[in-house]
Length: 336
Image 1 (spheres, rainbow, N blue to C red):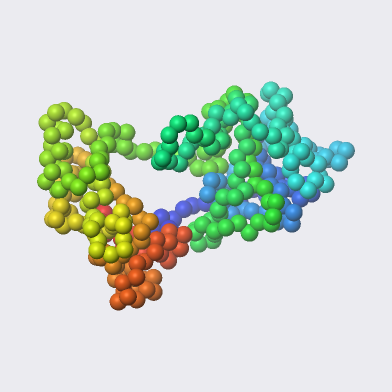
Image 2 (image 1 turned 45 degrees about the vertical axis):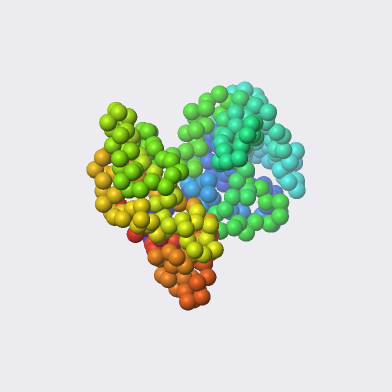
């Protein structure tokens, strides 16, 4: 499989057993003194596989203590004090966490009007105000990340649905007061560090949706240089590939060079590199692989489609069998 052979991921997802305690139908994991994992399961079956967000739950065990008092379970670290009604059938109104520094108490189910918000996936069709997702930081001094619906990685390294009972909850509570750096540090410790981007990625990028020829595009790059405009990246928009397909394809998806515009793709790529430019080819994969593509027969055979019928190969990135061929037959041969 492409991800486990070409891009292996090293997980350390199962927490140290000494950091894990159960109470009734709940399981609590002390990841750091200010970061707790909170799980609720009606069947008392919990999840140890890495999720899309959290890969490294195997952390050094922080100092903490637990005790029972008046039907409530207590867990305390140097910074947090958790209480939970052990006979509860959900976390809502049964679970609280108090921050020692501020004496602020969070109750499961409450909203946070002071969250500083996060990101949005795309600005396509946006006109005006748009609601942002919840972010990692809040002026309340705490943040809850709900991981319940995220996919997990199976033993092969492929993403899979959770085998979770109805009502299962998987929450991560960050209690940091005003120490935003500490919150980010704890997040990176369990989720993994953000990759450092190369210096050229911070430079000027250029792209335009226009059917340039190879000569026109190289001439434009030279014009930028002649006028002292520093470029780091040239993105070749979708007309690098065939767009007038003569079949049911919309033309937006393509993997076959348009030789009328780019008669010598390797030489074109080399010319960009010789000018100190990084490059990439714009791609919209949703249409799949149609019969006009140079790689169609290989892809069709790989996916058990009779190429004589000319039926398109559907884009199925959730299928590991398709994804292997998607990279090995469509992408890697274009790389230079």
